Image (tube, rainbow, N blue to C red; front, side):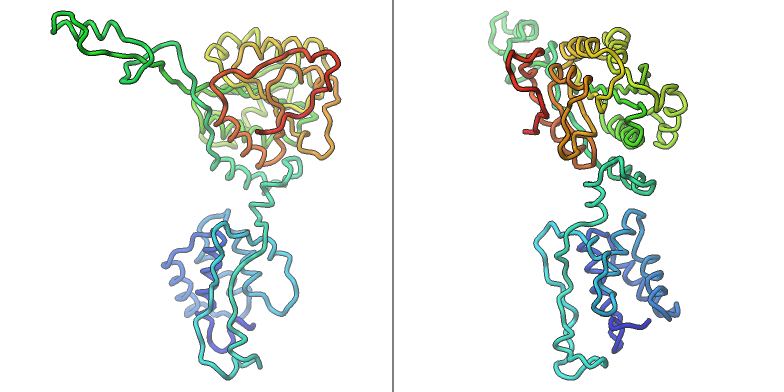
Length: 407
């Protein structure tokens, strides 16, 4: 291998410093992998930069998602000359306090063979650049994802933690510090003392996970978001209990069982084959009405949180949409509308469908990138146990409803 990194026979020292850089960027590299690379350099003939790159990738990288970080770190550390490499911008900003990584000390004086004094050759191997490939992916709009980015997004969705604040049921359980007396257990317990209430027994409300219902628009206007949003439905169904999932275009289809497949590709393929109105027209009001009258009694009985995902482009009757959303809002704990267009600068909900829907939803949130999904996860985890104050018809003279910001 040629280049300043290996000059003077100090390749092993630079390999160790490069491993430190990989670890600082979040790539897990064990000591055994570092020794494997050192042994590989003794056996494999290194005649070019690409040979060394291949040896390092095959020994230091075990996960496919670490390849972009490796390529960026390699281009940064083993660069030749002083030209700027755009891949350096893929090295992430360290979350912890940046530590200076120094190369092993060399004897003072003399040079390394390229005319540069050794004292000047000692440099700190650190990173202060900002965005990594994963960070760029978190900010990128779902509608602009390539096929490879969709696959990377799937892995990131799998790592997200989904939780909803539990609900209090009407049933009670024995508790030491309950708010109500457990008279039956108290009398039974004190019968041995002649019936005198010497021991006080109490009860407290039972707590159960709150169900979640996801209703996703897969019409033509949502086509560029549908694949990623279906992966979101799959991830949230796998990460939580009591999740019901539906999709709609001109009609409503329940996909809860289809998402129970272990492989996400099989699940998404089954959904795309069995949903006959995929990438067709949009009738949100008819779909919500079908949900209320066919599935409402079955899935809304335990006060769930309902996520309705749509861009609001509706070919149906706006009055029907408003009336059915009002019915749905009264039947659930919280109705959250997720709109992928809401993340676009300057977006205004001016379509007839959105104008009819806004008075009857509790939260109007974006769902255009991974950051918006992370914010949604935080929102669900901090929901109040009580329903929000609702006013289903805007007051006279009030300003038009717009986006509700996250707290």
